[in-house]
Amino acid sequence: MDIKEQAKQYYLEGIPIKDIADKLGKTAGPVRSWKYHGKWEGNLLMKNIKSLRRMVRRRTTKMRNVAMLVVSEGTIEELADSYLNN
Image (cartoon, rainbow, N blue to C red; front, side):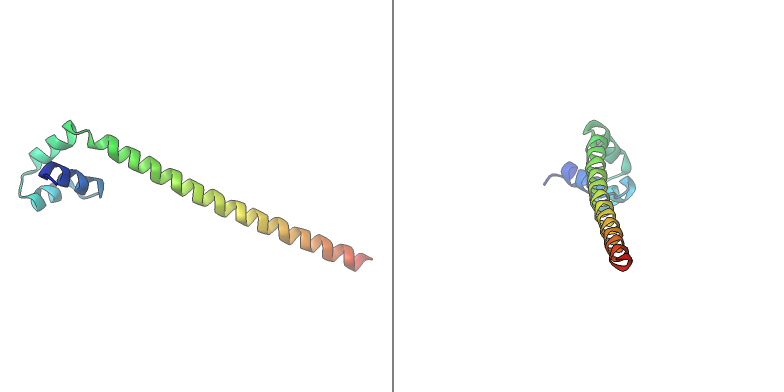
């Protein structure tokens, strides 16, 4: 992997540019230039969008499961009430 690709990987992992430059033995200037010309921000944005979509799907599933549980409990209570009233 070349140095620019390694820098990009570090950036996408959330490592600050100054720290990336230190790891690679460079100054921050070239790393910023690679970021700008390589359009790393767009890749980071897409990664964040995918992460958000995944989080929404998980929460939606959890909310559905809770709703089904509440409905199930309500149904059980209704059955218990009807049994006690008969």
